[in-house]
Length: 293
Image 1 (tube, rainbow, N blue to C red):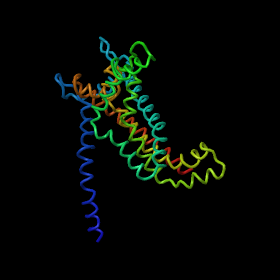
Image 2: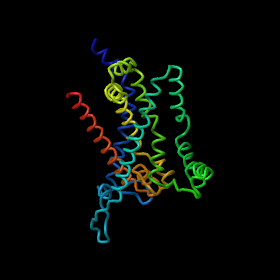
Image 3: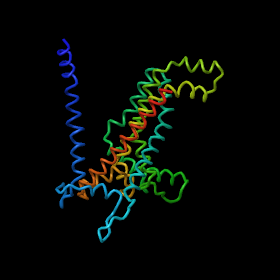
Image 4: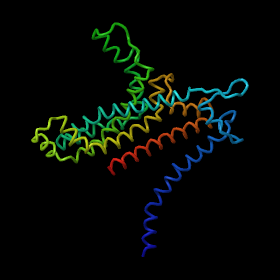
């Protein structure tokens, strides 16, 4: 009886495990192997095995082959972490009130608002990001509107800056913050908020003691869904940063394309993955400690 139950369980989870192994674990192992090989002259990898790709992340070689500390890639990695963190922060600032507003509406209105939030997914991310280029460029819609209104006399350069990249990232990943928060707030009993007001709690006190504790799981899930993909994004830095403000995703993409340095691209992706896993483990540990307290 137990054997039959185990066989049925294995048959149910087998396809999912196969997909995880083939499309996740195997590619990561291939990338890990590539990171310890030598770049081919025309792309690809070849022997001998070496750790030079990881050394290059922190050091450059002088004419006499001695190692010199080079922070170029650390700056790119740091910029990626900062922009991903700011993207998550602004997504929470915008997404939490929006999700709360959606959760407080009637069911028909809620359904329409959820549809409005998901509509951007109907269009390719590349097209949506390029639309921001048309809006932010010197002859774009934003500058045209500002000049026509008399607020400025000459175009302002919005494109090719960290601010433009941040705007594109927030726009791209905001729905991933709104929907998890909305899914938690939708279950909130409005009578709890009414009871808080009956006990003379102001709006801020009611939010802090009633709404926020119930919204925290959605915020945590949304932060995970926003921070991780924003950290490895390369469309927004390429289009809105003009290739001048690289992020780690852009760096990895360049290594596998024009630079033809697959080992360094694989090493950068491994470093990125290690950082993300470390951050997730730290967050999980913090949640366990808070739950235990």
